[in-house]
Amino acid sequence: MSAPLKVVLVGLNSPGYQSLALGYIRAYAQSDDRLKGRVAFQTLDLTVDVDPWWVAYRVLPLEPDVVALSVTCWNARHVFDLCRIIRAASPHTRIVLGGPEVGPVAEQTLESHMEVDLIVRGEGEITFAEVLYALTRGRDVCRVEGVTARRPDGFVVSAGDRALIADLDSIPSPYLTGVMSPVDGGAYLETYRGCPHRCGYCFEGKGYGRVRSFSQGRVEAEIRTLAESHGVSSFSFIDPVFNLTQDRLEWLSAALAPYAANGLRLHTVEVDIERVDDDAAALLKRAGVCSVETGPQSVGAAALAECRRSFDPERFSTGVAALRRVGISVECDLIIGLPGDSTEEFFEGMEFCLALDPGRVQTSTLHVLPGTDLWLRAEELGLIFDVEPPHEIIATPRISYVDLRRAEVRATWIQRQYEARL
Amino acid sequence: MSVRESAAVRTDLTEAAGVDVVPGPNLVLGGLEAFSHPELPALVVAAAAAGFVRIGLETGGGPLNVGENAAGAIHVGVRHLVIRFVPSVADDDPVATPIRASDAALAGIRAFISAAAAVDQKVAVSAVVPACRHTAPLLPVAVAELADAGVGAVRLVADGEGAYGSAAIAHVSAACDTGVVNGVWVEVEGIVLPESHAAHCIIGDG
Ligand code: SF4
Image (cartoon, chains in turn yellow, orange):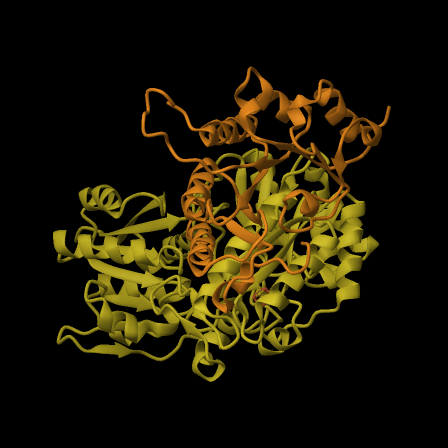
């Protein structure tokens, strides 16, 4: 039998984060009987602040046949720098990318980045395993569904799309399989994929369509194992909306309550605040939630319409008040530079949020991300943005470049004033 | 003795120098120099006990370099500083005047911010800077220096009567731009800026 294919998965994460995406694709591929004994995996979970030359210093001695990375707008520049170094130092190594930054623009990415061989579009678990299978058998990876790749003659070709994974439980848990271990007493959990909302600036609603859930048994097993065997005291749920339905909230609250009673805490879970009443607030508290993150992103009618978001100031205020009553801090998010918004409307949004005294008001500048509705409609909406990641907005029909920068600075000062308190 | 009876107080951060309103109750102690008040620590403690959540001091900044003033202010509950900052130029003879008056203020700001960082406490420091035709050329550098010291906002306040010539207005506008590129919000009170910089002007009395 020939030597196993050496696969190195490299995560370039924000400091303090681990790549759940890489955990999933490794757990799935490792469970594929066809790959057993034929593929050897290694994961390097690093941070984006490590110089790509030093990341390459860690990767290259492993003499990988395949290097795979998940790309977001935040790490893309580092990823491409790293790929260039690896390509130059080890021309035979296949470089495989996936993730929201490259999937929706796979062909353009391969055309402009000669150092990259192959892109996995959409959900990566099955497609990546199929790519590895093709490589171990000497088959043509260009035919694998969900793949865009460069052929030996240099042409970039895309196979058909792969259907979404119907049964999420078919992806083994990275925690239960030991592929991932919690770091510093914290772990990331995902209970479902997709989002019922369709916010124009977000990839989540656009990219993964309908909501698909992991089974309750699977999620409960992860919670139990992490809390009881790994001593995890802090969970971060990456679900787009933690209180997606009342039933789910009740179930999760019940599953987490015994551990919350012993000190487990959930930080910054995303909630639909307009659906939070006193009962929901009590359920969140019981689950150990100490802070939540929510909109409104904008209070301007035009921006909300362009982004297909709803906003009811009264219900929003009621939700914040209910959470504050039970001692849960609320982070209200606002985006500067949404289509339709003026700077005045943005600051009206800040005023609205501050008046609620939610705990935190977080502002960020719009990023026009590949594959999102705003990215597809940018020309129609007159959005001018940086084509290079992280795709920050440069100007809108209502806010000039200079006024965007002014708004960022002024918003930062307001935030600082708000947070400087007893 | 209540806090209100015992000090020049302002309950609105905006009124003192804060550029935007945040929910309160908030309080700024000072009037001119907070540290000249003999019972300052007790006043801050009393303000906190009275329920004020954002307590600020108005100061020239120099007293923050004295003894444990910076750490002590943080300890008793001060979270905001409003620095009365007068830009000054270095003397031609650095031996005769080794330190500018404004250097003491900048050092005081740094002392306060590092005392806050040492106990992982968030603070907000702003500055009020008089702007007249004579000091206008110093304003861009003053804003840059304040930014470097850690100030988050600067209010340039018209000082004295009379119209501002185009040169002075250009300096004030440049000070606003210096702020933006250094991450400091600059507002201008009492001076009419051209349309390109109108976003920095405070309407009315602010
Ligand atoms: S912003 Fe949140 S609610 Fe909107 S589509 Fe994205 S994940 Fe869903």
